[in-house]
Image (cartoon, rainbow over all chains, first blue to last red; front, side, top):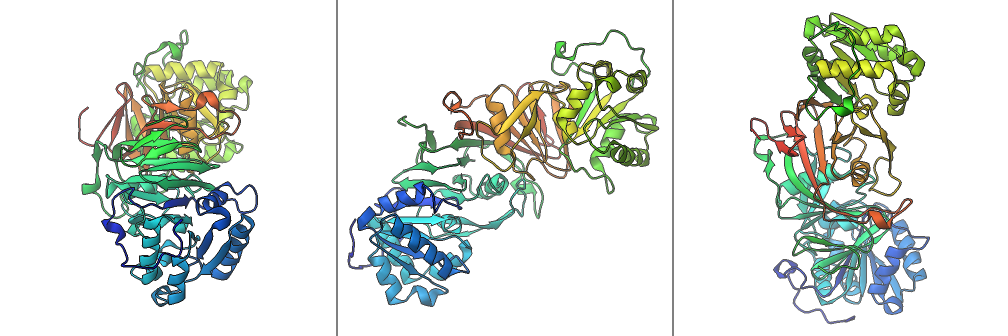
Length: 287
Length: 287
């Protein structure tokens, strides 16, 4: 961990290729265990340096930042973090504050809580806080997020959309995310809320992108070109890059979408996925 | 329609190949429109002979046979059926009664209501009623069913299983269905109840079988080797015949299932699917 690095010219994340960042992403499908075995949060603290970790909890997403902040302070301290502090940003002014930027500059791991993904992007994107987060991630810190905090990890994110529905013209609203990883769209609470339809709909707009549906208390850990799966549930990878037909040109409003030849992989703990080759890897196998 | 055909030696449905039956199946994902446009039920009555149709409503699945019977009598009469009667079977004795068998012998269309799929199979399978239904279907009548009445159409059916979950060792319980069509497993209320996981789990046990997840107020109409889609929602076809990996040999209990390379097709009204070639067909296209 390269702590307390002086802040130079902020790097532009979008200029960086897949797998060029030295940091890791811990992307959690929501409702992660906080009081039991805490496998996922434990791994986050481990990756962030364990007893030498300096954690910043970002509560931008939530309406109840104090409650969320206190919860994660307690959890991360009990998991052995050297230091845990909360940075709350209600708007871009907060995200340009010196103390917020300095906190991230000294962090080895940052954690985006759940809430509304739009609120994270609105208060942080285009600010000094975004610059320093990108810089520190490229240098090697761990960026984690749960639920809304998971959605924002990608360049393009699902802002909102109906659950428990088949894909339709109006099923999903996309918008720019924080862009820590490209070529991927995340959905969370995936099986629990029946979100296959909205993920399929999102990908139809850009079939080169891989859809990653993460169940509750389940996470992917992105390092370089690969991610691995951790936790209780499944990760559903949706690949529309070789579909043979869709009706996107002929529909509008809430018309149902047709698409033939979607590829699906159900991954569980121990499985990996190569984002470059778009190939799943079973536990113990090499690509 | 070949009505009032004398009952000969019952044919054994399982001896009959795919597409050899002269009848049609109308398989409805539940919650079909009964009081508005009624596109699906209208098509059922049309296929059964319209103003010359003789309909039998089978209420075996439901705890409230009188209420369900009265509802469908009203709906089918208002759609122009010449005659609608209810056959209720609480047990196998009911299903061996002469008047029940005679009613089916004279029917041009029969309709299985929703409720519990196990109750249909328990009271009808192995009875004279099953024999006459099979015989009449092979001769050309229309067999329709909604929800539980849809599940029972196949040789192997989903008896019960969790919704809104990823596939796990204990997600789904299979059992023999009525077997009007082979090589297929049906699931209903599909998107509405987030049932992808349980359908994927069901197919892992027999990957040659095609999974057909039917949304509410949506139906497939099986004629010969093909089905076509009708109604408001989508039909999700799940094909596990060319998956590249699964962990079925290594899991038990409620362990999560891994499977790589599932193929998925989302079909909407107007699309067709060839059960022999396992190929979807877009509206207006030929195979």
